[in-house]
Length: 182
Image 1 (cartoon, rainbow, N blue to C red):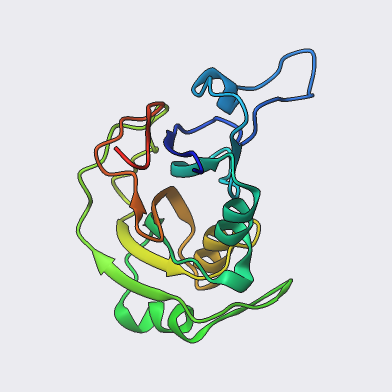
Image 2: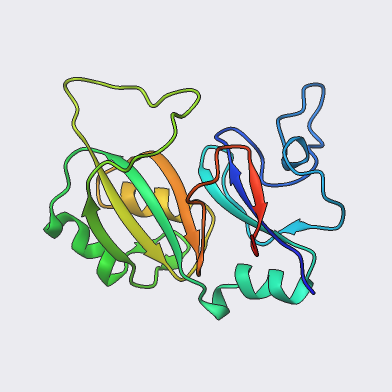
């Protein structure tokens, strides 16, 4: 039976087990998960937080990570500015980025979620409003959510992947993990 681990990846951690950069390697998954034979199913940028699915099953890994299988991924995104529903409509329709058009996303304005504190915290500026949105994608290009929000004029300040398919990071502290079956 496949082993599936749900990790709440902290901000600043690479979504791989080693960092070849020297002389000062950056934090990696190996500092949080000491389980042999599991690998990330997909990536999450170093400056993003939240759910990473790790598994020892190559087929499952491909099914989760490969856009052709269209596993829905939900992101909670704090953006700079105060977008309206009309501002977000292009994301729902699909936008054209440098690497081509995106699939339509499900996007909605949300209240600030009850999340853990980020280290370091997002810089607060009194004169610049911010807003939280929920973005659900069925593809996963490099830095896609950040590029999409910037494309419509609302740069991402904080990005948390909340779920992948039916798996969620709910109840998992930053840096902690649990088996998907528990």
